[in-house]
Length: 168
Length: 368
Image (cartoon, rainbow over all chains, first blue to last red; front, side, top):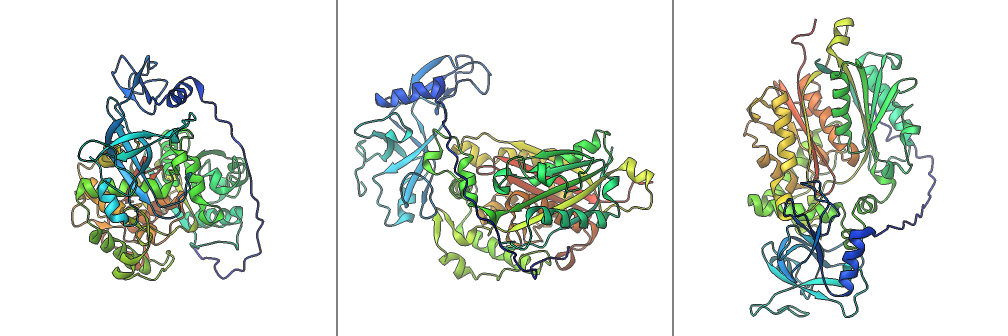
């Protein structure tokens, strides 16, 4: 149809709407966050399907039964998907940042978190180091607060220890 | 009950459409679609809207937008997944035989607010939002996954993006962006690995409306000639979890594709002449042509797809309109010769969680 690009703009109203939301943890997230304070990563398990969910779910998507037990996830796992955000990042820290979905040992789903200790001066080289299939370990911050950012991932070195800042 | 496209209108796209407010944009587009179909608003018995409240900047935006879409004293319903999803619902409504003449209207002013903040708001608040999950980040995860799953190289991505811009440059309904050189694309800034800025389709503002008619309505109104028959619609949704299997399998895309083809009476992509794919990045097109198993003869996104115009929420419905124009022989400079059957694909959600496929066939057979 005929357009209007020749039509003049008549001005516009700018409005910034600020909303505050209080998201209740509920039973499952509350237990998970309490676990983080004790440096434990807790997943939920459905005895009917044997699925272990991390992030934890209150119910099993497959069986539609309530997840009926808690399982402590391992502190190592394998990267399933990853990226390094170079610009335009809206997370809790300035870019560049590396994030990865990691399936921790003993669970059936991947959970996203930052990957620390990477040399990000060469993002292409850094991406190769966090490609899917790479094993990582979990590292907690010194004083966990009960937040998902209480922990992050680090690459495992050849001897199985966590890589430190600046690379292996 | 067979369903037909009686007429349509695609509004001229713009990077930032400040000359019109939303209701003016939608009224003009809906009115043009009615005129194209040769019917009046009073003849409509149903209106199906596809729009996003957060991007419209108004909750329950249909309270304002139903009227300019032609819904005065008419049954109206709204879909919030995508414009293409609205077409699926509108088709189903006519197939129910409760309705006979429907308007599908979708619009999006991507320039109106910060789209990535809206996308981030869609993330789960405890486990994903703190990591800034948005369209860029989830598209980057998807790109990495399909790069590994299909062996898609960066040179192929550059080639596909350039080819899309070249086709888009010929599209009279596109933005007419300058075609970037391969060197420009390779040198564009990295945004989220492996995506460069140049590999992503620029967002635009726009609107699209379609008038659908049942076979019963056409039988009762013999003076009208439909543009196309809607012979297949399929849709599916994947898990919200962005793990390896979810990202690599493209399961919902494959299911939507199979279902749409089955409805259209096709047992493969061989009967398709044209497909419009919602390729938000060059990786998307490379992945979808593989997932759909498209043979060489299928013309992929002759309109240029999102690289012609990309009003995010309704980009898929714009692609559907382009597919209808192809089977109607009205696509102008991007017309592919002798198109009997055209498909359109749309996706929505993080890393294409939801997929929609529509099949359109040249109209005429079976109409009294």
